[in-house]
Length: 315
Image (cartoon, rainbow, N blue to C red; front, side):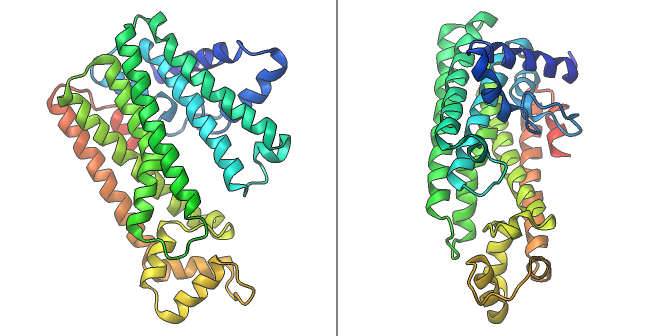
């Protein structure tokens, strides 16, 4: 079954759960699932199919991909709910649902998505998954998302903090973001097997893949200046603040603290981040996570996993 057909099955699964809602409410709940890299997106998937990662992990260890469709739907609901809550909490996007509908309605949309995610996991039984395994998968998913909630709390607590260390920042990324990718791999493999020789390296793959993806986002945020304009303290900025000479470091601090005597433009900040080696260092860290993820796939392959589709995510 190719990814095009799998995507269509996932789309129908998501729509099926949303159809449980009153018709007047469905469009609201569907909206955060229509953005790029979400289950109802209309854009062509020109990169690895992230929405299918649980299914791909399941099939890589010999599992039944059709059984993983409800799990893919569940994680799409959870991720979309997280996106919505994140926009409300950050309050920095003019395109956020909270701007369009207000905070109360937006919070209700996110809550509904969480409930649909739990219903999707419960529906694994219809696909022939045992009750005991369904409960184990539900507990596994919920444990990862508790970690993500704690990571979000730490991120919000550090908002505007200029002296955050590299280690603190990476820990937040690991809890808030990488945990969700690790969850997709872990839960997908659990559908097929509990063999730790396969499970452990694919959890490791998911974690390092998630870290790589987040550092990639940080790099893109500087290249396209979105994060600079929003004064986001991301990985390259943290490195530059720790390595730049005093006059430049002081100007960077003024910019990111939005002080009235700040003299830097976004273009000048971008140049500083390149000149200090912050972007080069970020690329090195990204590649180190890519290598760790690739090594994890090789470990799994030694025990019989099919690595082909997993490696698509490392390109």
